[in-house]
Image 1 (cartoon, rainbow, N blue to C red):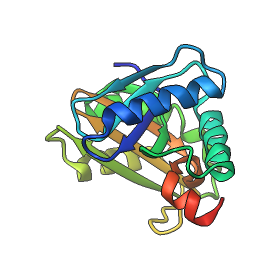
Image 2: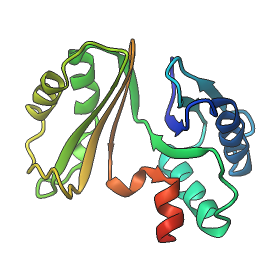
Image 3: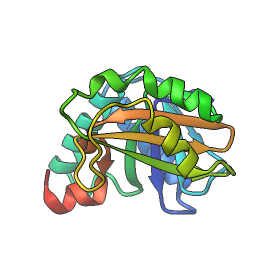
Length: 174
């Protein structure tokens, strides 16, 4: 499974959200994105040829300009890398992106687990060991996001505003 975006929706609305995400990606310039329903209710993954952070920015702009345009997608998350779900693979993937975080900037590790028995605390401990930056759990400058979906894990090192929360964006108008 190769993807560079994740999207969430309400359970039971995966087909509608999938069509919506496909249409949005089309609208912003990807004529043939792959949008796939996962075996986790409410969770989609997508592969786009567009740069994932740009996708977030463009879809955020659409949400602000036309709040009723997006009806099914709740969140869209950019993914930097996808690896087989093993702690050493996750650590290796994260290590490729930690140089984004300036030495004085803070970070938080967030682990979202679906269909795995891996321990969140073991993952966090292993990843934290390779990042020599200040930790801030409340208002980090960066998020090391680990999204586990069974055998596959999406890894991202992103700023908090690089995750699109559609409802929050509509509410705040930003």
